Image (cartoon, rainbow, N blue to C red):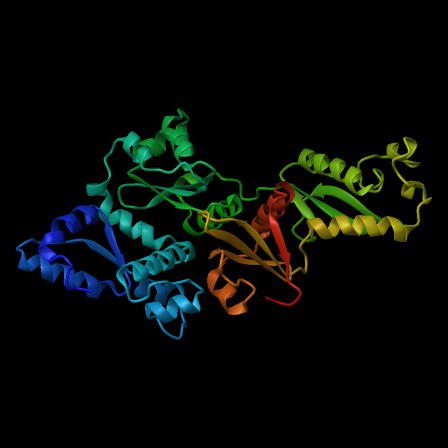
Length: 398
């Protein structure tokens, strides 16, 4: 294989060019970097680059693995590897592993450290140059000051467009960001749900100075159920109460009502029993022959309750085991979100040939995330609005 390969001095100039202003990522990077430095030293060239080691990062972010060799680690994580022990195959596997590590690094230690060291030589102060480097894709972005500290975290379906808005806006906050910004990093998520969840979790973890004005609770109202004296399941939209378990939550009462009016039609529910029509007699739908009379006890409770139970089951994931499958970062992958016994466990990305029903592979792919009221609202709201979201119900615990 090496008989007709070029000598090192023949490719040295190209290596300098492609690694300039870059961080070299390798599995056991100290070995690769030492070889490079030794070869350049023989040529009289002081080769110096910052490196990141996916062995060390894996030990920090994925502890307790049986082995951290590239082959065994990628196999345990379900990362497909072709052309093993060849430069291209190992490099592609390392890229996929590094993407997974970036996703698991909720504290953003990797990018904060990289920006702090590299930004002064890499990034021009001109805001236009920063914008030109950004993608027009869905993801989470991080605005850094000159020390690499994250001063603002946001999400967008179009990162480039959103950062342009930050840099051209004349509001007080935007002007302060424009003065302090030294670098913008980002993570593509493909899925808007992944971006929303990462934004929420990482704002809580990093507490950037310009995110402090963000409302602590992003929803105000919730949908609750109760059984009345006649045995009918009733629904009501009320202010969100942390002590009660809601079916789903809303940013405003108006958005809740809009949602319910549509589902009254879809599930042939009673306006009175869903809290949309305040009356002591029949509801409006009954008067126009679109309600079977649960409001005046003409329809049997067991018949009415079957339909309303179907509605509740669709929009509540309480006690459910399921996977939500959404877009990935490219055409070859998808994002997966794990709900276990009604609790959001985390999310990750998988190649289309992954067997995500395999418990060990699924657990290795998932970046654990906190299950709180914000994540519940984000997931429920996204499920309501995105009918193309694939939902896989798991019969047994995944």
